[in-house]
Image 1 (tube, helix red, strand yellow):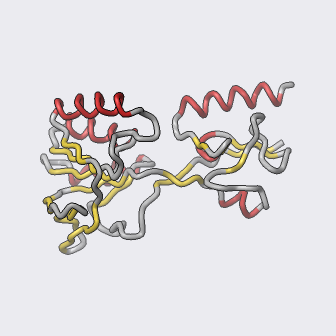
Image 2 (cartoon, rainbow, N blue to C red; image 1 turned 135 degrees about the vertical axis):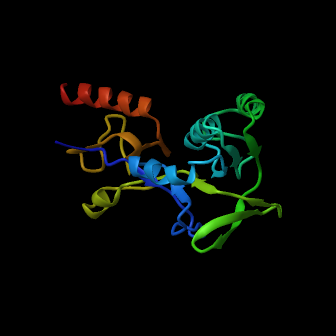
Length: 203
């Protein structure tokens, strides 16, 4: 039996300036270390993405004294996890804290000088000065090794309720596992899957 839990990586659209020195995603410790030099003094942070990771970073950076704006293309925060009422309550809480929330909009241009993002332009036309940009749009499952082995994949690795892939001797858990068209990027789901798989493998 083989268990695969290769996790995921940050999704970054093609038009995002990944080579800019003050553009970051957050998946590893190195990402946080790289941000620190740009956060030594209070600065304006633009977070692209209103999901769980983006909002956690928004709250943390706001508590450190930075001005934070979250840009969300959807009409509510955490649109995959929350219904409209819950999202409204969350937005109200964050706004009361002083975090700026912009919904139904997206960044269409990153203006740069000497490899640094200086301003963002939204689809609505608004231009804002920024000191740091954080991409938190979502993730992509690391399925390449299983795809190369001929295992069936879609957005993630397709599994059944016993967490078996299309090869019954290979199991997938965590962020790469896809069941019924859904993937789960939270630690509690991975723990539950691990418990289920342990029960399956022990009969």
